[in-house]
Image (cartoon, helix red, strand yellow):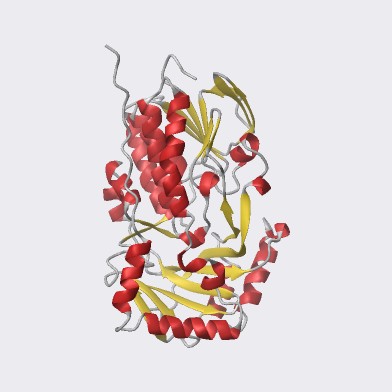
Length: 414
C-alpha cells in the first residue's frame, strides 16, 4: 500500500477533527479536500475543555493565542436547589482546573474558527494544497488497492489516496465503509440537548449552575458573551429512533422533563422554541474494533464517541487529528503503515475518552424523587470543606493523563 508521490486525502466533515487534520496535513505539504454538508461553518456550540494531551496538541499546533482570545472564563460549577440557592461548589481554582470545569474552556464553534483561521494562513503559503467545500457530502465510495473512488452529492466523482470520516456520531463515511450505524452505536439510556438563551439577570456571573431533579439534570453555563448563556440538559429516556430529526417531539420531551422542576426551568422552556442553535441527540457510545478499514480511516466522534457525558469528545478528536496527520506525514509512501500506527496510538485515548464520570446516566440523572434528594444531600456533603481535599484527590486520580506518543520518522535509506 505505497504511493509514489504525496497522497491526496479526502476529509468528510469540517468540524474540529476535520479542520485540525486538514491544517496539519497542509503544514506537512500533503494535499487535502474537506467536504462539509452544512452550507457554512457552524457557530456556537457548548463549551469544551482542553487539558493534558489535548492542550499539548493545541500548543504544538500553535492554536493557543487564538484559543486564549476566545476562552470562556468560568469560575467553576455550582449546584442549586429549586429556588436557585447554592448548596455546593466545585471551583476551577480549588480543583486546579481538574474538576468538572477545566482551566481552558472554549465554545466548539469558536475553536473551529481558530482552526479555520490557522488553515487559511497555512493555505496562503501553499496555494492549491487544500480545499474546503461546503454544501456537499459523500454519497458512495469504492475501495481499490491503490485508491478510493468517491461519488459526491454535487461535485464530480473523484479518486483519493485516503478517505477520512470526521463527520460525527452519525457518520455517513462510517456507514459506507464499515457498515450500518446500528452495529456500532450503543444507546446509553438518555438524550442531551443544549441551546443559547439570554442570561437571566439573577444568574451568578462566571458559574456553571446545575440542578438535578427526577429524570433530568439541567444547567445554565456562561458564554464568552456575558449577555447569553447555554442551557445544558441531560434527560433519561428510552431509545426512540423516531425522535431523530423531529424537533417538535424533541421539544415536547424536554418540556415534560422540566415541568415543575423549579429554578429556571420555565425560562429554559420559554427560550427553547426561539433558539436558532437548538441541539438534541441521543446519548450513544460508538465502539469499533479499529478506526481503519483499508484506505478509509475514522476520526473523532465518528470513530469513538463516548457521548457528551464524558466531556472528552473534542479532546479525543483533536488528539486523533494530530496523530493521524503526523503518521501520514511520516510515511506518505506507505499509508498502510501510517494508518496502522494511528490506530495503535489513538486506542488508549479512545478508551479513556469513553469513561463517564460518576458512572453514567444512572448516577448523573436521578430516576426518582428519593434518588434526587439523596444526590443533592451527597453533593452537599462531598463538597463541604472537610471532604473537599478527598474529592480533589479523587478527581486528580480520575483525570490521570495519557502522554502524547512520539511519532517516529523512518530513517532514510542511504
